[in-house]
Structure formats: C-alpha cells, structure tokens
Image (cartoon, rainbow, N blue to C red; front, side, top):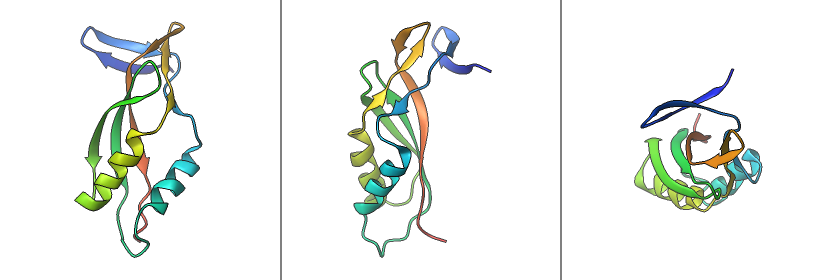
Length: 105
C-alpha cells in the first residue's frame, strides 16, 4: 500500500517517506538527556515538514506537555536531519508525524 500525501493539487503517493539520519532510539535518548530527570512528562506528538535537503522546515506540536518540555522538543527536533521523501525518484517536501516517548507512568 502506498503512502499518501495531500497537496494543494490532491493526493500523491510517496515512494519513500522521510527518515531520520540517526536512529529513533538515539533521538529519544538525546531528547531525554536535555530534560531534568525529576521532570515528568507525557508523550509528545509533533508534525515535522521535511524539505528536499532533509532539513526540518516547519514544526508543529500536535500534543505537548508544558512550555519547558515543548520548547526543548522544538529546539532539539528543529536541528535533526532526515533522508528526504521521494516521489517517482525526485525528492519532495513532505510532512511526517513524530512521537517522543514520555517518562511518566
């Protein structure tokens, strides 16, 4: 089944979705290392728009916690690099949803 992406001209199929250059587990641990260990937070969900060079161009918090945690997430995720999405062999700008696991039980 193809991945679909909505554009202003309708839907297109995506042959390859954006992928982070570093493993997701490393992203999670690096994010956690920037937060006070006593700070409890829930899962965070963000939408990132990745450009054709693999840079984060737009970041939106879909479900956050508080300004402290959300600001750390924005600052950290904004600097990540991705392998760009592709459509018919060409790199395209594409949004993806991205989770960060919370530490509260």
